[in-house]
Length: 294
Image 1 (cartoon, helix red, strand yellow):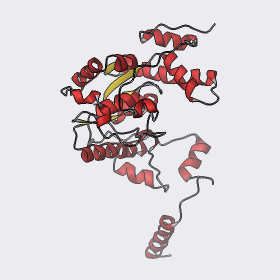
Image 2 (image 1 turned 30 degrees about the vertical axis):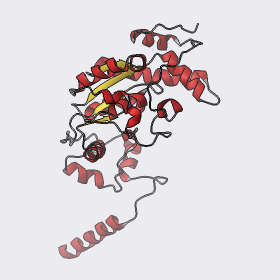
Image 3 (image 1 turned 180 degrees about the horizontal axis):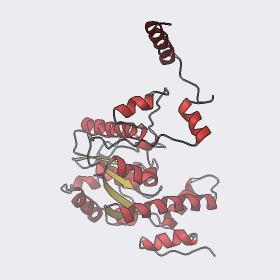
Image 4 (image 1 turned 90 degrees about the vertical axis):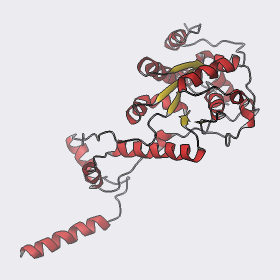
């Protein structure tokens, strides 16, 4: 067979491969995935950091049921701060559809993580441009669980650590669920608390508590504005006069407390639940007193 014939045959084979429909995830998977299962080898290429459109976004890191929606709407009421509903960036993924796609991206000095980072950054940039403001804030609570990824994506990001007494978080979750499993709730709250404490010990940022936010909102928001480098605005406290979008599940709190448009006092915990020892330890590290289970 001549060299020309071999070349045409190879070209035809590559063309068929390129036009072939993607392999179903339910099947045997890609060749790369099969190699990983068979040899234990993985592609360890890590793409370099690419420039960001939004260099210094702000992330509110907090447990669930800690007042992050209240903090969001207070910040969103500022003329220079855009704080939309929970964006769940961590759930936006890039899927490379062919065996050769990772190699193609590698030639561009990109990998799956960096492609996702570009997508996340574009979402924030689009939101900022649409708002006409200067600072964008994301308050999605599960961000606390992925803070190392956020730091990798945005080395110059800024962080607001929002704390609440774990007893209050536990009580809020118990009251919110139809058939609360206390052990499961303790585990959930501890997971957030552990990661949040890791972030506080590692990242630069400003700490505010739910109790401060509801008890002394002017003082708390003044300190936050100072940290973010903007002038405090009295209109932040009257957040009900501003448009904050829809309040609904998976986008933040949607209770009558938040939709009232007014800052409500923190709910009193009549029965203080006992906490597992490690959760009580973290509570005390945050400046709270706590009772522990035996």
